[in-house]
Image (cartoon, rainbow, N blue to C red; front, side, top):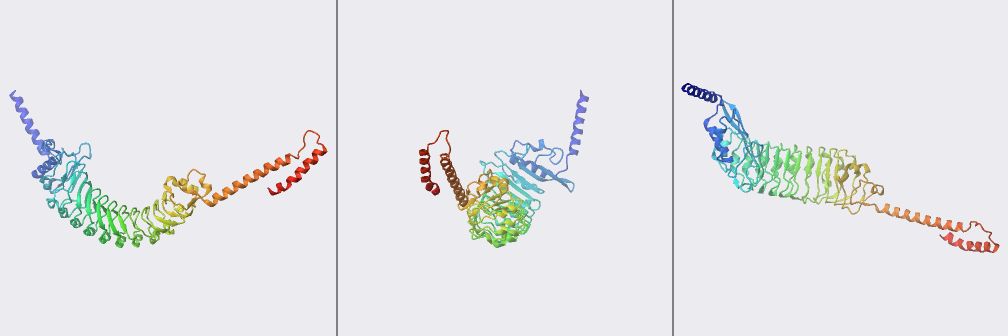
Length: 468
C-alpha cells in the first residue's frame, strides 16, 4: 500500500513537470491580464487559468491568437463576441477593465454582438495610448448597447490601419483627432447616430482606401480636403444630412471605384470634375436636390462606369449622346427627374446593359427599342409616367412591353380609320349582293308586267347605289 502511494506521488510529480515544461513560455503578468480582461466581458464564473492553462499553446482560447518573439509568446489578437459556436460570448454584465490595456503586444481587437441594446456601455475614454505602438485594427460591430462618443484618445493609435465602428449606438461628433491616424487604410463609421460635420482633418489620411460614414445624421458641407484622399477606392456618405454644393476637388479622387452620396441634401449642380474620375465603376447620386442639366458632364469619359443612379435629383435637359457611349454600363436610373426630349435608341447598342429606368420624366416621342431589347430587360425597363411618350402598335400586342406607356396616337387613328373603311366596304358589299340577288331568276315564270315593274324599281334605285 505504501509502495503504491509512493508510485502515485512520483507519477504526479513527473506529470506536472512534463506539463510545466510543455507550456509555452509566456510572461506571467500578460497571461493574468488576458484572463482578467476576458473575465470582465464573459463573467466572473469563467476561470481561464483552470480551463486554459496554456492559452498560446496546447489549450488555446477561441478568439485569442499569439505570436512568438524574443523567446516568449505574446497575445496579438483578441476577439470578443458571438461569432462562432465556441466564441467568447459577452455576459449581461460585460464591461471593459484596465487589464485589457496591459496586453502591450495586441495588434487586433474586435467586439461583435457583445453589448445589447439594454446594456448601455461606453468605450473607455482613456488608456488607449498604452496600445499606441502595437494596435493595428480596432473593430466594434453590431453592438446596439454601445453608446457614448468616439474617444479622442483614439488619436494616439499611430499604427492603426483599420478602424471599424459599424452599427452601434454611438453618437456625438466625429473627433478631429482621427486625422492623426495617418496609417489608416479603412475607416468605417456607418450605422450609428453621429452628428455634425465631416472633419477637415480627415484629408490628412492619404493612405485611406475605404471611407464609409453612411447611415448617420452628419450635416454641413463636404470639406474640400476630401479631394486629398488620393488613394481612396470606396467613398460612401449616403443616408445623412450633408448639404451645400459638391466641391470641385472631389474630381481629384482618381483611384475611386465607388462613390455613393445618395439620400443627402447636396444642391447647386454637379461639378464638371466628376468626369475626371475615370476609375469609377459605381456612381450613386440619387435623392439629392442637385437641379442641374444632365448634359454638363461628358459621360463618355467615365469609361469604366457600370452603375449610374441619378434618380430623383431634379435633373433637366435632354439625354446626351455621351451617356449612350459608356460601353460597360449595366445599370442606369434617371427616374423622377425633369428630363425631356427623345429617348435615344442607342442605349440598345450597349451590350452590357440590363437595367434602364426612365420613368417619371417629361420624355416625348416614340420608344424605338426592339422587341428583343424589351424581352432582355423585362421589368428592368421602366418608362411610365412620361405622358407624351408612346409605344409602337406592333409592340403593344406582344408579351414583353413596358407598362404604363400608351400606344402612339397617330397609329391609333390610322388603325381606327382602317377599321371604319372595312366596315363601310362590308356594308356596301352586303347591300350590293342584296340588290344583285333581286335580279336573279326564280323557279317560276315571270310575267311581262312583273318584269317591267322590277326593272322600274331597279332604275329608281341606281342613284342611291351611286351615292353609296
